[in-house]
Structures are given as C-alpha cells and as structure tokens.
Amino acid sequence: MRMVDIIISKRNGNELTDEEISFFVNGYTKGEIPDYQVSALMMAIYFNGMNERETLTLTRVMADSGDHLDLSAIEGIKVDKHSTGGVGDKTSLALTPIVAACGVPIAKMSGRGLGHTGGTIDKLESFNGFNVSITTDRFIDNVNKIGVSIMGQTADLAPADKKLYALRDVTGTVENMSLIASSIMSKKLAAGADAIVLDVKTGSGAFMKTLEDSRALAEEMVRIGNGAGRKTVAVISDMDQPLGNAVGNAIEVREAIDTLRGAGPEDFTALVYKLASLMIVLGGKAKDEEEALGMVKDVVRSGRALEKLADFVAAQGGDSDQVYYPDRLVVSDKSVTVKAGSDGYVEKIICDEVGVSCMMLGGGRASKEDAIDLSVGIRLLKKRGDEVRKGDDLAVIYYNDETRFGESCEKLRNAYMISDVRPSDSPLIKEIIK
Image 1 (cartoon, rainbow, N blue to C red):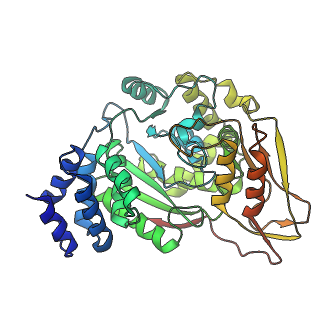
Image 2: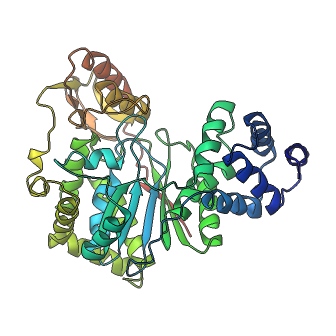
C-alpha cells in the first residue's frame, strides 16, 4: 500500500477503505509517513469530506493509537462529559459533584487550558494543595469511594490525534466536520466511559459560530459515539455571551460553589441542571429527565452536592474548608470597575473580547509554557438584555499587574454593545441531539 495512492484516491473523491485509514494513521503516528504527504491527504479530506463509515473508522483508529483508560474496576455506568469550550465555561466544577451525589460515578481526565482562562485542572488548583497528578489506581479508588475524581491526562490517549491536529492547525485544514468530530471523539473513546454527554457551544464565543454548523458537529459526534457502542447525547447551548458572571480561575470556582449552594447565575445553573439530568438518565439512576431533574434539585437543596465537592477536593489533597468558605479562594484585592458609556440596553457581549481581556490580565495562556495567575478575572455585572444608564457599572476586573489592566479594561468595555432597543430573548439550550 502506498501513501500517494491514498492521497490520489481521496483527491478524486473516493471513499477510503478501513485498511487505508489505518495505514496512514498508524504510519504517521510512528513517523513512517512524512508531514507533507499527510498534509496533502488532510487537504483532500477537507475538500471532499468523509462519510459516516470513514469518520467512525478514523475515530476508532486514532483512539486505538495509544492507551485506553480501563475503568472496568469502577462499579456502575461511567458517564463522561465534554464541552467544545467557551468563555466562563466552568461547568465541570459544579456538574461532576451533582452527578456523583446522584449515584453516577464520574472518572474524568481533564487538561490545562490554552487560551483565555485555565482549563478544569487549572481551576481546581485554586484549592490549596489540590493534586491532579495522582496514579490511575488512586484515581479509580477515589471514584469507588466517593463517586468522583478528576486528574490530569497522564495516559497517552490518542497520540495520533495530537500529531494530526498539530499538522491541521498549520495547514489550514482544521475546519472540516469529520476531522473535528473524530479529533474530539477519539479522546473520549480512549478515556473509557460507558456513555458520553456533549455540550456543543454555538455563537460568537464558540468554535462553531452558527447553529447550523453546531448542529452538524453535534450530529456527527453523536453518530460516532453511538457507532462505537457508547450511548451519546449532545446539547447545543448558547455562547453568544459568557456563561454565568465569572471569567477567570478562582473566581469561576467561587461561582461554581455558589451554584452548588443553589445561588448560582440563572444561565449557568440551567445548563448544569440540564447536563446533569442527561448524565443521570444515561447512568441508569433515573427513568427520564424529569425524575433526574428532581434528583439534581434535591442534592443541591440538601447540601449533598456541596459535600461531594468537599470530599472530592479533600481526597486529592485540597483544602476542603475552601469549599465551605469560598472567600478563602484567593481572588486579587485589586480591582477596577468598567462603566457604561451611554444609556440603553446590553444588546450583546462579544465573548472573544471578554476572554482576551481575561488573558491579558494573566488569567490564561497564550502558549503552553505560560504561567497562569489564578487570582485574576472578571465579574460581569450586566448581561444581555439588561438596562443600563451612562456611568452604571458593567463589570469588575480583578488584576495584579498594574501594566496589564488598562488595555484589558478597554477591551472589556468594547466587548459591551449597548443599543436603544432591548434585544429579544435567546434560549440557552438550542437543541438536544440523540
């Protein structure tokens, strides 16, 4: 089998066989096939696409290119969750203890963030002493004992995807639905869960800007998951403004704790409850979403979800007192308020501008080597549809570096679009794909 023949076949619009897909993925992962040939194939796939069978095969082969996390020692149906990302998306911090408190085991590998804020792992390190570098045995033991554990990605999951994504990123071949879906789902399949809930964002702050593209991605990933024998459901949710009110690291952890106390922002709470309900149904603990939602509200009202977060933090070396006293999570005491420049209504908050504003403060990484300042961030005081008067407070910026907050403040002010007419309501949950 020759790589050039595979390139020509896809260039001419033909389907690739399972053997051809396996040949190029494994050969490239092992360093036997050069970048320039795989670049040519990626461009051919970008223009001519892949069908459902090809996409599922590509996903399986990438998932099989490295380790598979064996979760068989964990009792019950393991349900994983993945978000395509957005500004203020601290969902896992509140979602996982709720679902675990409802009896569904959560064994989750997460990564560090590259972009406007840290990832789930970075945010969890806001708890003093929290350790994400635990052994797989301890990881599994923690899930069996307390119902939830999250650790850094130590296993070599889907190394083919790492190589292919890096190549696509520099050759203009990222935006292909099959390649995006297989990249995400190969890691999810290798992570070992029995069922998967996907939170696919749509809007200005999402990777997929339009509902049509978000729907296509969600449908592709659900097909892959179900085709691989993992019950998979996708939620398409709004990212035309930041999720919740907090953007940063420790400040987002505080907001997640507020949500576990039943006092979180309305939009963030609604999304967490929807995702949790779906996970509980997939985990076999409720017959339908209505019953599951009742369970979610009960564990929040009773305090069991908050206790589960404290148990989880303590089990991984963190200071669980900070769960009950979140003011002890360090947020900078230096702050500046961004004020409205005119009367009107908040028509839009440009997500990407808010995210970049936070990164300028040191709340995110421009490169993998950058250190994150967990104490900086942004609290939004006004959201889409709110009425404002000139001089009203729009947001608060928490900063440490005097040289950074001026430019960050200006970018955040420009992120707010104020008009004379109140915008129409936009639903948070756009669609459910099963």
